[in-house]
Amino acid sequence: MDPSHLIFLAIETTCDETGAAVLEGPRPPATGVPRVLSSVVASQASLHQRFGGVVPEIASRAHVQQVLPMIDEALRRAGITLKDLGMIAVATRPGLVGALVVGLTAAKTLALALDLPLIAVDHLEGHLYACQLANPEQAVYPCVGLVVSGGHTSLYHCRGPLHCEFLGGTMDDAAGEAFDKVASLLSLGYPGGPEIERVARAGDPSAFAFPRSCLHDDRPVFSFSGLKTAVLYALRGPNEERGVVQPSPALVADLAASFQEAVIDVLVAKTRQALEKTGLKRLGVGGGVAANTLFRDRIAAMTRERGVELFIPPLSLCTDNAAMAGIALAKLAAGEVSALDIDVTAGLVRPGRGKERVEEQRPPAACAVES
Image (cartoon, rainbow, N blue to C red; front, side, top):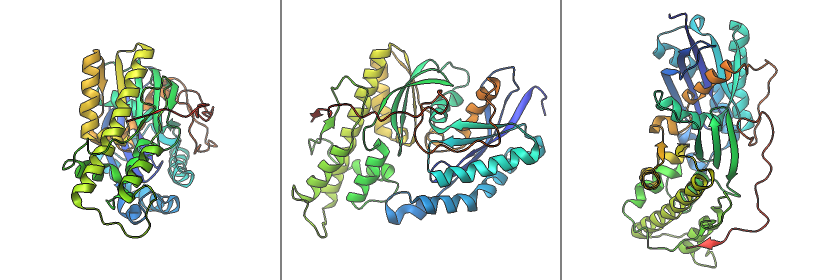
């Protein structure tokens, strides 16, 4: 082992994926981007599919069953043992309380037993840091950061990996949450994002003029609940007819395509707005919705037009994973080592601002609806 380098274990249990990763990077005070030696993820999609969304208690129990096997597998694939580790990193916010506690408990136990520093990381900072992890030879920061996932749709002004200022986010559903709910309405599978994308390929994105809330609002906010309701009415009628509805495959495809188009229009437009307001020429995107092919194409086209450098991680680093906790190396270099009595924080906090909670970002007036 190179004594100038540090090997560390990262653990991810914020929601419904149990992840473990082993990374190696320059030992502080030297700085640099770590490289991923191994990364494994145990998905819980099959457990939550019948419910059309994540059930917190089921997620927690699955993490208890999977966290140690995932750690063992990550170590095995990296070709190391516990004695080779120099640090333990774990995501402690935001997420489901029970799920977070499982990962933190495992991390605390290892840190205490091995007498290693414990680094608590922010899941959202990690999503954005995945851009740097995937591009170690390029400068990603400063940049506008967009996190778009099942639980979050937020914009940030990122001056560095540990200094991200919250610009604004969704007032109701996150984009990924809306994908899941609309997929459920259309009797598609879970998770909804891949299913909507698959079905939408056969549909007409202009078949339905669904609303684009906040599209031309100058505030950095998103709203997707009205869009979800519009899909419901298009499917069942304005009176929301009860009973079994059996739409044709063609109708389902058109609804999916039109819904997807509306979400992506808003995501791209609001991100363009953030770039214009900040004047930044780099954009980093993270989160599961960033795996959507049409979204990746549209955001790439927008950034090319504006002369903005775009960073989107590979698909394996978009969805939840432990490797993105590689940001822990930067935290260690900054002296941000956690005490063993640290607790989880379920709610959203402002990345880079300690434990300060984000106040509700609901504006005094509703967003205008554009079609």
